[in-house]
Image (cartoon, rainbow, N blue to C red; front, side):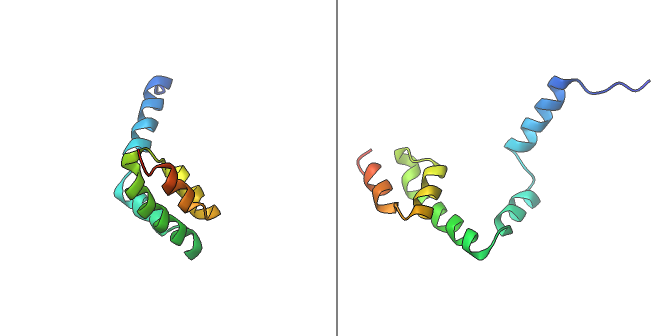
Length: 80
């Protein structure tokens, strides 16, 4: 008789995989996308590294790069 894995255990395993993906998955994620998308990601990483300590989120940095609102985002998190 084969018993299936409980929903709680299955969900816990999924959470663990999402929280700590293998290095191969992370590298594939970085290589994925068009050159334009990679450029946006690179610029967003630079912006995020500068503003994260002041409270900026990753999504706000990406959106600022895509919409050319970098100056406004930097002003928003300038003092904090």
